[in-house]
Image 1 (spheres, helix red, strand yellow):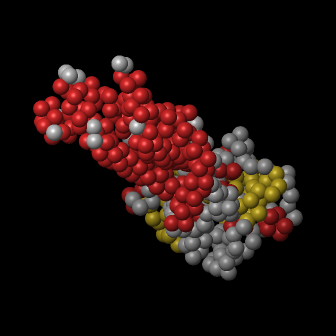
Image 2: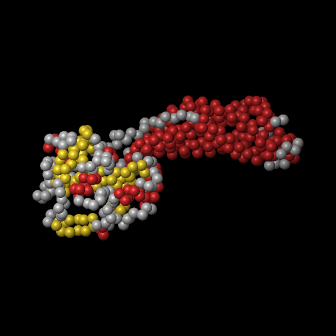
Image 3: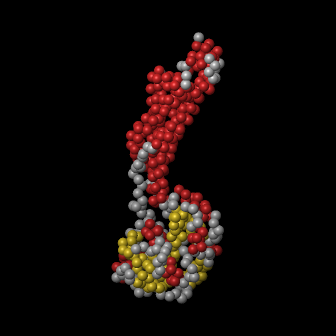
Length: 463
């Protein structure tokens, strides 16, 4: 008689055993299928969240190495000059070749006196201290102040790489001086040494500062005085031959999960690492995705546990039933039926039941997957502590007089409350593959203790 036909007839004859084994396999496959669907949904949500939040790697000057600096005593105090390799477009061209980097934002640094307008005055340390810092940027929208929501553009537009001699100013500075879009302001470099020209800048945007200014601000540390300009304007203000990114270049990655690999590849490039170093900012993703990451680990552990327990329970049940079929096994062996064929018979019987159980589990898991996901997600979220952002070392441009960094505003970084789970045919196919492997392993393990016996010993035990 055909192997599968005999297996089907046996399962129909032993209805009680068939029902018990069916329920075991049905529950097992329902849990596994639900877990696979939840894990797949969590992976998908984590991937989407990583790309929406992003991460960055910043190339900056290594200010800790004193050999890259000169110190001279000037009229107003010690003048510090950078003598190391400047960060230029050469570094951008090399780093942008690394796979996984999607864009960059170069940041220059300078300080200027106001020529035809007035800054908001702060604490005065000397007669010449009424100046303000100004960064130059490739994309002002990607500038850290705007990304952290410390600045919010309310009029005009952002600076782009094509702009030439433009500026963004604060609402406070505009109100103080009666300035509006398309007006021009004139500034001059505030460096002590050298001859510097007056430079005219066109106002293309006005931003609102959300930072509460303290009482210990100087004119230069008051963020309301911050002028944000393009690199061509900075080049003329500072009288440099090339565009230099004194405050570094921030490179944005496609997937924060790849940030360590990308950093390692950048460090292998032919750059002057005696003058440069890298800082990595992945804290935004880690903060908003903590519950998803915890859920992924939780579901993975559950899947492994379910697989191990299922194999053990199945092996125990099948072993008990096979021992009850000693007489049948002995007769088959005495008739010359091989041990391998007997094991195949047991496997076929279990698989007949498993095929039906796994198929029906598709419908049961579809009913409970979303609810199970919501429950697991809530538990994972509750177990996660509040994560503090690891603020990168952005340098003086991001500190106030007391040395306090501008904090991240996470209002736009929304961690999902739940994830949408859908059981697919691919998940079912994977359950069939995993389930059949467990069935073969469990039945083979359970059958060994009987089929390894001699037919004579089996028959003597029967008598």
